[in-house]
Length: 167
Image 1: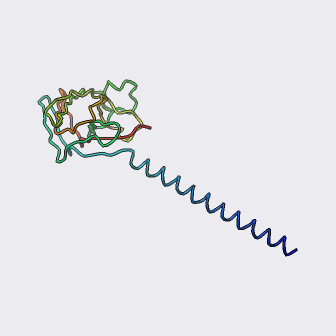
Image 2: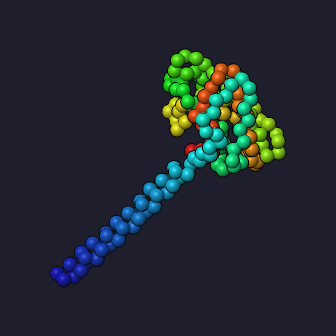
Image 3: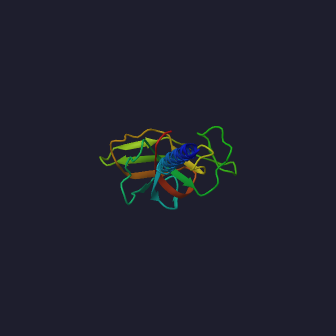
């Protein structure tokens, strides 16, 4: 009888140890997922609120825009609400029905200028009321200036350099 109590105590101890190990592994996996999700994106503010018009506006950020992740893009957060349901991302429309087609250029640290193709950010997304570039910039250099213009005056709440890792 004493031996069966001893066996049962040993078995309970083994179950407790396995439970602790599974709990620690689960916490590690949850922590790893949380770190991956929180470090998946990084934004650098290039400019605060700004009005662009048909004349080129040049913005020089305080810090160079460097490729910090797998992908980079320029994000123009609009001050006016964009049309939420927009099946054609090349058609950038405001809630009032008017359309806009901003032009953007980015200059690298060697002075080379890249024309960016601007499109409506997908919805839903973290930059839902935004216009983003969809091109791929070389990731072996930093960028020092952004140039913007729009035939229709456009008020932006901010301009961001958005870096992110794919899924």
